[in-house]
Image 1: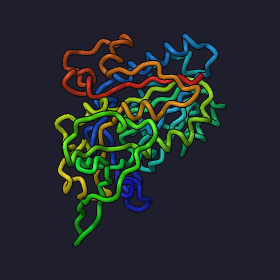
Image 2: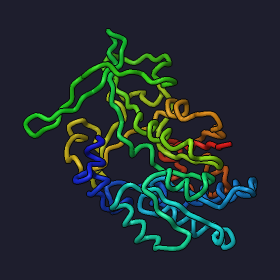
Image 3: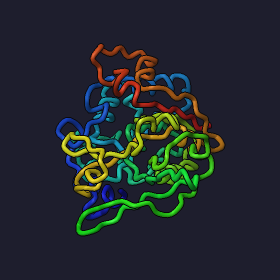
Image 4: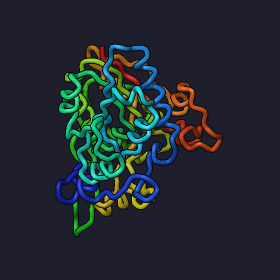
Length: 319
């Protein structure tokens, strides 16, 4: 998955992604309408009102096609915009080009290759936001072996120019993992682990000294996330089509997105360090309503049978 998404020469995000939105392989909430972006902007303004000493610096981790940044900057207000520094952390060259094309090169905008660079530019004090970032990280796919009562890695390998999978060595369960909790999974149940994201997060979090953070992504709590999903949640998107069969997920390496839902029980436990406090965890629909954004009945961002419930908003504060 890491090679298919991030290989320097042929990875999907490194070289082959063309667009995010209706004309691309997949869409995000902020490319469909303004409800989520308006709610995030309202949240930013509320945080600044409550903490007047906090600099007007925003760091967006993985900005997609730039639509969220564009909407925030437009809606933030004239006086706030005068003091605003908007930093984008982006590792994908094709997406960076889309962002520059959409946003232009303005004095309030800065781009960075990694979070440490962005935090240094803000003296460690900033609001940090991300929308559908965690799901872009490669996952470890593991399988429950009921007889051994162990989790084992699912290995991908190539035979005759086709990719197949097999069960490999035991998976070592990390500290605080949701896998340590009780479950009633049947033999062969597959789940995904966002270990790469956790390692990446802890590689820079110590450089963040003060501020608030919003992390928005699709997922649920463990083990409910995997109810009626014996093969897990990993899937691929190509030309707005969703593929869930393993032979389809392993097809077209480097030319389609591969993703999975977030186990928020696992992520919430493993993100916490001293000085980092979880303020709230809620559905996207609740977050939008809480920030006084009135949506239409057909708004996909708040649909209780779709993105409104599937997406969760995680709010942290660094003190």
